[in-house]
Image (cartoon, rainbow, N blue to C red; front, side):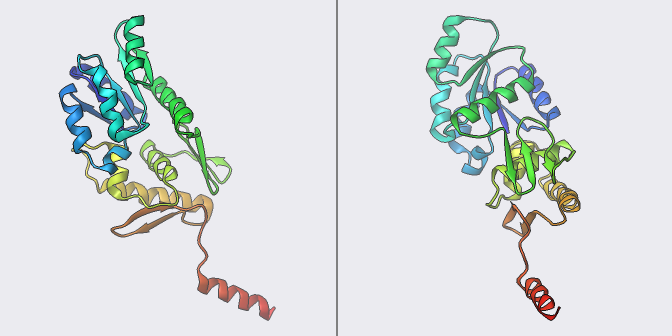
Length: 242
């Protein structure tokens, strides 16, 4: 999820629409709301933030330290209306990771955020989980050695699970990452439907279900199917009889 901070609705709505077209959730905050939200948000909510975009406002120079207190190395990008060397240098001095002049396409923002993450968080632009390779730049994954086309929501869910592979993620965590924290138009239960469709498609390609689900606990992406002890024993007995 991307967080954009600006007091102009025309700016926030434009970027929100742009991110959603690329399959990424976006939450808009007024400058007066940012500090309160950072302090009140849960760890799970903050973990779903992929970057913070700061529009032009008086409070902006003081925002990076506030964001860093709870969001660690989350990329912070300032959006500038006009080129100004002194202001750009001041923004870098305040702690932002990049300064972009508007208008800037959402895809460029995604590319720059990916570059920042690779540099500061040692995060690659792709990740292999067993026979699944996911990309974090909008490309479809490669599953079983072939490109695997997915609807944008299912692709984003797979990317989020891949980033957290080996540990369980809850329905709420997935929802916050894919739909955003303040999206009241979509019910959280839609996650179950998307995950169910994703599991069926992956199972057809891989021959096993790579997503483990436990009620009330969450989902986990596995590198490979786990062998069932009973079946393994039966197979061994069958081989011994041959």
